[in-house]
Length: 172
Image (cartoon, rainbow, N blue to C red; front, side, top):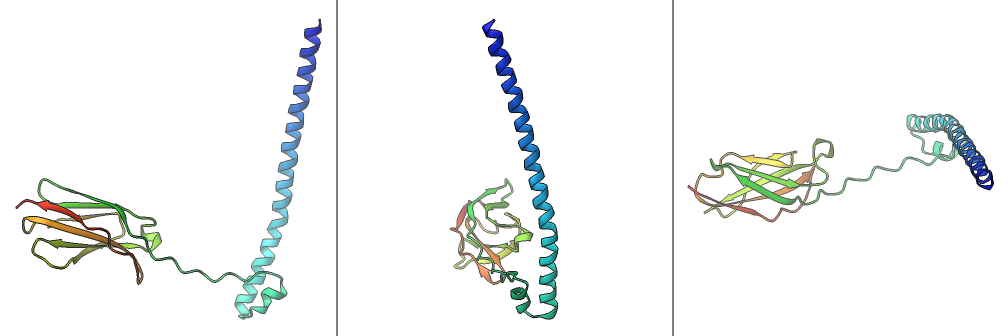
């Protein structure tokens, strides 16, 4: 008899707990909705103040409207040096280079310059550029021997340092 009373009490407490949790969840959602309702007109007021300030070219409008002026855009940092440069040589002697870089791609505005130096050459020559993190050199094997590559990232006039050269020893 005593066990059934304990079980009934536990079940009653469990049901009360579930009801309290459901009530708390509903109250929290109601609060989120109220905050959202409050933010929507505020966003409109701020957009109107900013629009008026920009159209009249009067920065005092921000102070009068008690709205912070927009922060000036910060320049993008210079691109970082590409890392984990590696490559493969196909049976026909074509070289494919790959590397890691953050950020990369068209949306970042970064592209990569690739330079090559063959045996007997004293300086590197730019052989191409790409926005991808891979580059295919179809003619590295004009002469046999070592061929070196280095890569650098560039955005506008900002450039990274060159990578440590990667060297392939190509057969004739």
